[in-house]
Length: 288
Image (cartoon, rainbow, N blue to C red; front, side, top):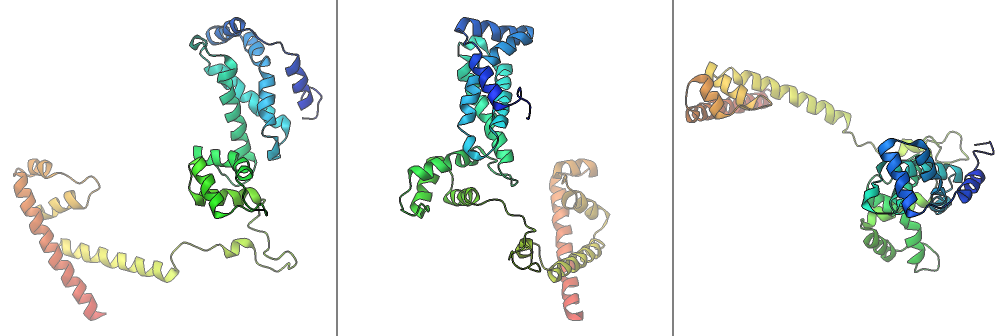
């Protein structure tokens, strides 16, 4: 924002010159906007509350983001409040709008304060915005470094775990670091930080071994299914090898037998499969 009309100073000047609204006038403007979509009513309603936006935005200026952007995000929240406001509830618009203004500014800060996304849950957001204040209030050491007791006290106050407090404190205490940055700044040939991130994937030999075992079991099952007659095979396929898993009653209706008979056939088929699979397994062990 380089123009005079778009500067934070202009917002402040315009907000301070806007008149205050009496309760009845505020109520009438809110009704006109909600029922008639009167944009002039909306403009007058929001303009009279811009000083509230500026006041709330100023509380978050220590996060290092442009004040003009904070004010604009607060204005977005103010417009959202105007769209949702219910005049008949007999609540002043400023009381209702405060929550929306603060929430809009906080969401903007969380999106732009760091390239790493943080504070996705309500408790994490509360921790993000209250950690500095709680840490200063509960400081017990002369060095200013939080100790274990302080972490536990902050965690209890916000309703998160001690590990969450420690993680958030480390994030607030240090700037973002690129994974492509070298470990040693003085050495141009040094490895990048990402080279030291442990891989959670299984080792290649384990992957290959699992693949071979899976293929072997598939072959065993295919051969074992040949031991079943047509009706046994159908019951096993529909009961055990399909995602839906047919019920005994539905299979009984299809085959024209009772569900108890289906259960008996299924048990017999599973026993045949068990014998065949054990036989194939023993054969593979002896043959290598």
